[in-house]
Amino acid sequence: MVVAEPIERRHLVVLADDLIWSTRLVGHVQSAGLTAVPARTAEAFSASLPRAAGAIVDLTSRAYDGLAAIAAARDAGVPVLAVGQHDDLVLRRNALAVGADRVLAYRKLFDDGPATITAARYADRLRRFADLVADRGLAAALIGVGPDLDYLTGYRAMPLERLTLLAVVAGHPPTLVVPRLEEAAARAGLRTEVDIATWMETDDPHGLVAGLVREMANVYRGVAIAVSDRLWSYHLLRFQAALPDASWSSVTPVLRDLRMIKDAMGLSFKL
Image (cartoon, rainbow, N blue to C red; front, top):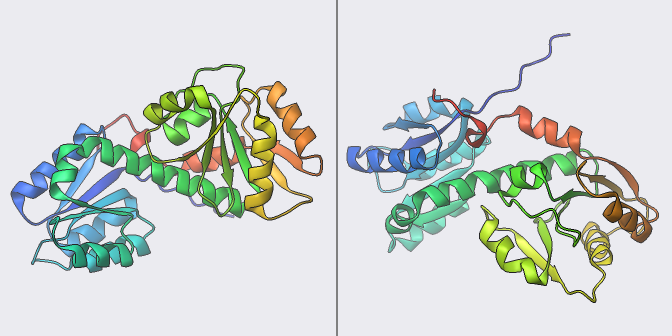
């Protein structure tokens, strides 16, 4: 049996036919530490999609159909950031309707372009991880402080006794559970938008997470949960007490599959 090699998605493809806009967009991608491949025609854009980790589409060109380009990227499984005029609300709305992950005005992108592009990569990484959690038949994945949390969100939390944990429940947006006193640090440290649930010193944070899992998964018996290898046993034992009917496993195989498809964030070389 021949096993297909995983596709390494190596770059962000930038579709813009105007040379000035293309140069500026490519520059912002490179400033974010990523590799950019410029395309000025629909044909060149389509040819770059199979190995693209993401795409940026300039909506204002008359040389190609920006909405069709977005749809082509989504059909190829490539996340799309679209950019256009701030006052063209109809076009921006249509871009979202055909599959753009975000649509920004030019000024917004150029004011904080590298941060916006980096956030899009982490958002896509979280989305693909959530898809894998669901595909494995897991009700949830619980990611404690450590390199896995950093990889998924960019947040390098301090390894403290108080519970900080990313709960990824199948079919729902991820939730970061943090002590109330550390909420500001969490919001500053996250590299993409993530829902945050806080707990006070008198609360039961393990019960809070167990409640999130049961409520979001809509099950009350037999849930399958994967946890990160760096999650402290102190926390794991309390989760097991709060979810006595759950089955437990390591999330490492799921993360390994996620890392097999390289996104542009994970590469240290240029094409």
